[in-house]
Image (cartoon, rainbow, N blue to C red; front, side, top):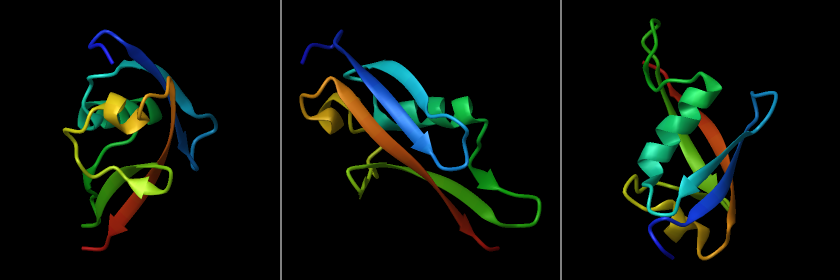
Length: 93
């Protein structure tokens, strides 16, 4: 995969009316893309006024994407379209 190669990415989030779609460079880090997706859905991670902590995790084929430095190209494994799911976690404070 070349560094200029682009991958179509679709992110599904249950609470959203529609999925977020983007074309991403294969060498973009998952952590950077996650921030783009959160922004597209109007979401932020962190502590809420009531003391809870909200985080979001992207999943691919049921596997959580836990390495923010992993590239979109590596996650896509040679495919030109990637389907991801975004899940919210709330830890009560």
